[in-house]
Length: 256
Image (cartoon, rainbow, N blue to C red; front, side, top):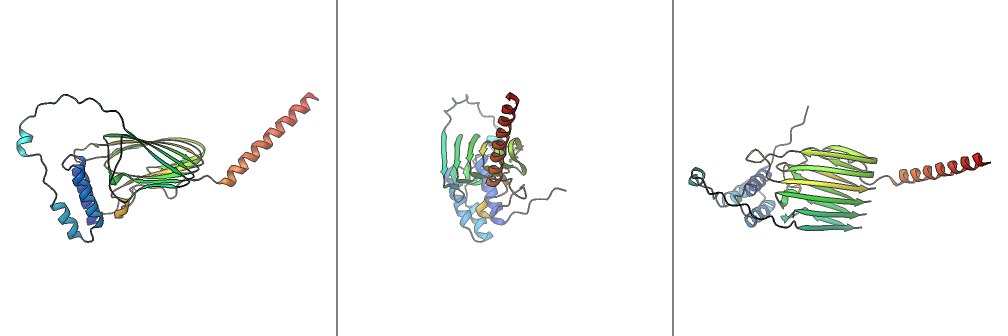
């Protein structure tokens, strides 16, 4: 029996309402950023309600709905923006305040860690995060209203994608989750590509930002060996060397 997600607190519910209004175009990013910052600092349900009430009403009126609007020609597609996150024996965090996710992000974790909360981010309609983890790892938190796809190729590591774990010497996986917005379909699509060597990643869906006490909607009991056991790797290399020595000995014996 699938466990139901816990009920949202007044703060989490207010954040959800603000995010939904922003995703449907009712709020510009500056108002979304202001409201989100204020809600993260709110202490009581009354403060959360006051912050939501003071937001401007939806610009869509009944007349706008009844009168058909002329269809504008499609705008020329803008070049895809790219941003880099590099954690070399260090860390990258986007967990405490609103931020922007561009269309393509390249994340590199070399003996370091990356932690990002997409619930706090302005999201593009379609975004790609390419994660390269070498003896490092990442945790990516994704709101439930977003379509998310996780593709992974792992050697000597592990990936926990949307509650499904994969790992070992060599592992491939592809997990997907469909998000539902106010219109019944997700307004944002995020593709996460993971390439890990002796490292790993965890992608978790959330009902609310982590800083607001959001709980994972789905999660594995433990991440599969985000950093591969070095003793096991040493044993693997030693067994490979022994096999090569035995092969050479047999070849010499055959020649004799």
